[in-house]
Image (cartoon, rainbow, N blue to C red; front, side):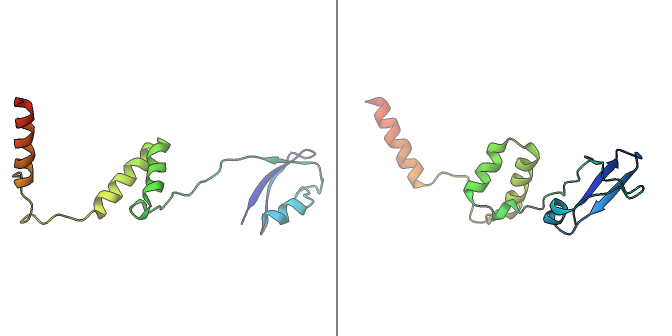
Length: 116
């Protein structure tokens, strides 16, 4: 429910008015809660912004790219942490640090072209 802070220009009283919708605020005639004067000024106070509970691991690649390009280090760190936690783990038994036959073939071709 939107709340708006006001200060009366006649008696200097401060008060808060709540509305169910923004449209209700737009059509309201605001009067001082203390003296009833209509000469009031809206006071801008701190705004509380809720913390985002975004699930970065379920974003599309385009959305992730937008986060990276935003330059917001907190969001980027959270994105990497969440995506890293959900990435599939490789089974240790099938992982080999040794190059396979394709790497040997590529190495042989590269060496042959260097000697020509």
